[in-house]
Length: 426
Image (tube, one colour):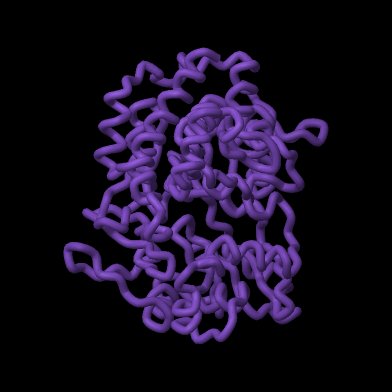
């Protein structure tokens, strides 16, 4: 029989070496042998599905931890994966429970309050929302508090199956119903059906449109064109060959951004979660450092963001999709803050006259113009990974159909065509 190392299996299955070693230690891989302290795995081994840890192991850990007075329980669906104490410190039963949990823990088993607050902060509504006062009132809170709001909503989020339980026996299905009755207003979809799932949570305006789950997005302000930009970027992405989440116009001031994953079977993990420590100023190199296998997809993303003058591509707006069979680069989303969505006519005119100077920034340093040049200098031909044979009439028609008009139509069209020409020349 031919054997492989943990590193070779990790690369083949697209998981961490640490995760493979945990699978070996827990007895979840058949035929493993140990030689000179090293695990050797049959090369034809089958990757196990996301694990559910043995009740005996859980009970043993639970007895030890409960002696210290755990107050809450972090669960993956109905499995306890961590214990949360009254001081908001956390201890994980198994920090590598599955790939999503490991993206939060990075293999560490104990966490302090700042980690718990950071975890909840990524799962609840932002304090900068315009309707935050109404949301807090509905939650029975007088001020914005990450932990209190996280506990009120149980940390439920449509990206995965993690949530906060009040008892070790509490079921996710019952908790969702309780949270929706006491905190959220039940959304009714366009066919008249009630939705009692995290996607129906209208605190973050998740909902259903034409039978698809996603998020409703309202116009930032009466003077912004982010609704039009969201639609235009999706269509420009299709034209150039860059995958974006589908976007549908609901009314004059609202778009619906569709989720392209099967909630409960596939899990969206933000790129921000993949960094165990500090990262550098160059976001392109940061992403390549943690996911070099997505170099092509990342280069295409940077090019599209350059062409559409993206102004909101932080690392929570880039994700990977994880499932039992591995992971993949997730289509781009949150594309509305682009194409002069809130710029004045004067700014837009100056920008198209000097693209390099007015290109938007990404991360702590560098503009998208800098990044596309860096990628091209590294040997990537944008003409080979993108469709750059784009006509002015195609761009014009996309922008008009999206609702662009006046100076934003004029300058968005000029910007797109100029940046595409620059990519052709690189």
